[in-house]
Amino acid sequence: MSLVTTPSALVTGTFLAFAGRAIKENQTKVDHPRMWFAFGAALAAVGVTGALLALMAPPAVRTGWSYRGAVEAVLVVYWMITVSVAGTVVFSVWTLMRCIKELRRPGR
Image 1 (tube, rainbow, N blue to C red):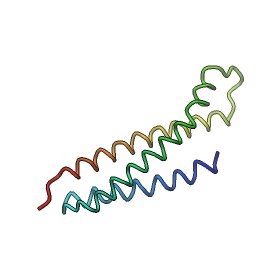
Image 2: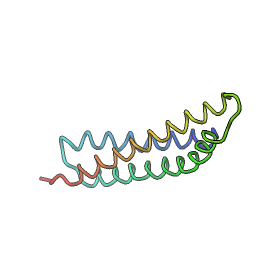
Image 3: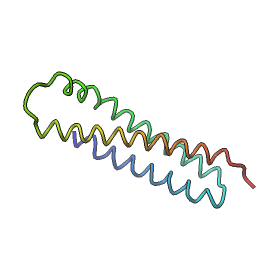
């Protein structure tokens, strides 16, 4: 699991950091080409986190409904990672919407 989540988190974090910085700088000076790159980065972040959530959610839901054993640390950590990925999906979509909003701003 760590082979998948750690690189995905690093890549997604890099994409979102770039997009966030581009949005912040675009508010003072409109730069459409840079915002298109930020849009691509945000879209890639949505793709990476969405794919990861699609892989992690079914086992998480299955263990939540069918597992009747004692609380195990592995399952708690798995659920924590799954919830964290779900939150990152939401943040990625929000960043993507902010990029779209900035792209709609008129240039000079």
